[in-house]
Image: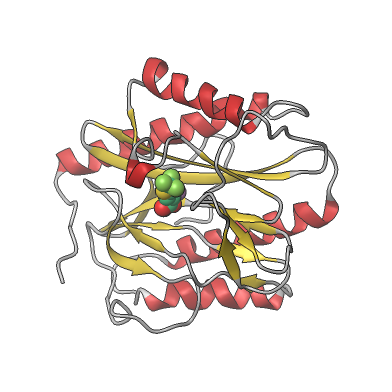
Length: 262
Ligand code: MF3
Ligand code: CO
Ligand code: CO
C-alpha cells in the first residue's frame, strides 16, 4: 500500500501554511462561543472566514454530501455533529469544532474543545483527551511504530477511567482529505499496524474519549455520531508532519504550549 511522503520544501511549506490557516479558524471562533449562539451561526462564521479571510476551500463542504464547513459536536455527540440554526449553545456545554481546509492543494484537519462556563466533569474529560493527543505527539519521530500511538492514547484514557472510541480513527492527509494509513487510537490490529513512521508522512491524530462506554451510534440524519449510553465525549485533533528529527504540528495554535516537543 502506498503512503505519500511529503518531503520537498514545497510540500512542507504548503502543509505548514494550510495548517496555520486551519488553526486560525479555531483561534478566530473562540470569541463567538457564548450562550445562545447556534451551531448553524458558528458554522456560517467559519465558512465566511475560510472563504473571505484566509481564502481557502472547506474540505467538508460537499464531502460525501455533507453541507457544512465545520462539524460541531456537543456533550454526548462523539463527532460529525451537524451545524443547525435551531441548536443553541448553553452554559455547561462541551463543544468540539472540527475544521478541514484546502489551501493551494494542501489539506489541514484540526479540532479542539471549548467549555462554555463551568463544567468540572466536562473540563476533566476534555483535558485528559488533549493529554492523550499530546502524549502521542510527544513520541512521534521517524523509527517509531505507528501502533505505539494507539497504545499510548488508550493507556492514558483508560488510566483516567475513560474509554476510547474505536469506530473512528486518524488518517493520512496531505494532498487528499483521507489517505492511508488509518491511525488507531487504541491498541488494536489493522493493516497498518507494522508501519514505521518515516520522514514525510503526514497524519492526523484525533482521539475521541468517552466518559462511559466506547460504543457509538449514528443518528437518523446519517451524520451525527453519539455515544450509545449518552455519556460525555471529547475529541482533539492535529495534523502532523514527520520530519527527519521529529514532528511538525502543522495545525498548532498560538495559545498552545507545545514545548514538550524537542
Ligand atoms: N474532519 C473529520 C476528520 O477528522 C471529517 C469530517 S467529514 C464530514 O476526519 F463530512 F463529516 F465533515
Ligand atoms: Co481527521
Ligand atoms: Co477533523
